Length: 344
Length: 256
Image 1: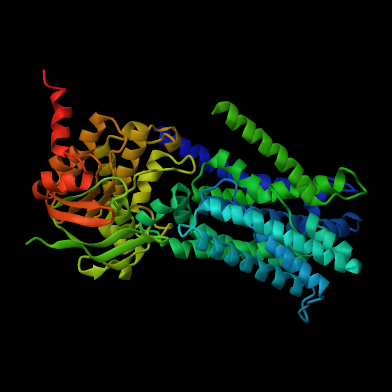
Image 2 (image 1 turned 90 degrees about the vertical axis):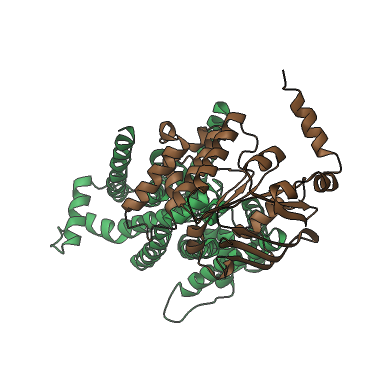
């Protein structure tokens, strides 16, 4: 009986996540330099969805042209980074793993910076060059790190991967600094990658993010059982019949694509992928069948709130969103660490 | 002659430049409990790792007359199950979740719910290992013995024909040692099954094994019935001491 009731509690918590996300989204759209009442915001969105005539008010362009694309991008990036982090933490059986710690984010931002500095573009797609290079570099850095890790230690132990990831991130950031010293006229747009920002959000970017998050998210969700086994241990996964190599490969590719797309659109936003899965795991437990979907909503809400703070706290000045997430993330981690130490 | 379940032909394993297993050749037949015995560094666990796919090897390992490399992962897991020596679980899964994962190779997709056969195998495994009171407990809060029983239950739920056990009762209480070894002996009574286990304790090997492979420095010294493989001469060669005299001396302490 206890088992039944605890599952019931968890499913109710799972239902709460989408509701919470919608509420946070409404608030994020309503609040800003010009605040719009929640009811008006909901009305404008409702009319837009059902293609009803809009009232003649300033609220309409603010909601639909300025706030909505930005909030959508923040939600999707939060979701993508968080599900990537959750999958990496399961795969590597390490709660410190995410795109930043295994070097994928570093690689992706190096790719983006190269595209900006050398002006690499794809005809017809305004951000195409940056995006493709970010994804390619994310995949390449992952391959480089895994090959090197395999050469050093054929069991591909997670510590080796994370150590190499940290070294690789230092390496990419030094190359980025080198490129910046030679590229004075693009300094502003490069700084933007380094700190993370939501200011270039558009509906086109939101659609790209939606496609990437849905496709890669479904791939990762499809690997839930395998990720559970990896989270117990890679050996145990192999023993119960998981095709260890194939799953590792699938998850790592999906994660690189997600992180590459996110970095291309918003730069490197730290800590989201690390912190969200932790918080969600405390609520729904470590089983990826529940953890991954809940993380999508948790990550979306977290990044929308972080973006809200970044654009309102020192308004009209806007903080880079990475500053907000890292600030919250660092404090959160300290608290987590302190608690774990006190208890253990 | 009973059916050959597992066969090693010229299997060698290197860790870097060190040859850990040097040309191992032996078979595991149905109904047998094969004990892999030898001093530290003899390559016992490495042989289990090679068979279970955790260590790269040279040579050929076949299961039911087919190279194990030609099996799909789930096919092999339905034939062969492994109980590892150490379990470092990463996150706070419940005992029930860990045992359920044993059915991975039998359930085709995460969207298909568990079949009656799955439920029956899980219930049977839980009953055999006496885990009922711990089912909803986090594996991070279990004692070493309870954790070992959890993974043993996962292995029984997996329901393979061959068990590979790496020091199944290492560092565990005596009562628990007896319980686990009796459980496995009982499991083996079912036809078409076989067990291969790495055991450090020679007395355990002698009382439960039907056959033994004695290893020393990666090389096979004997492959015979337990009685012949663990003969006075073989053990003296491998352990560089009079094992028989030592064992008797240890036992006489308990006589009253």
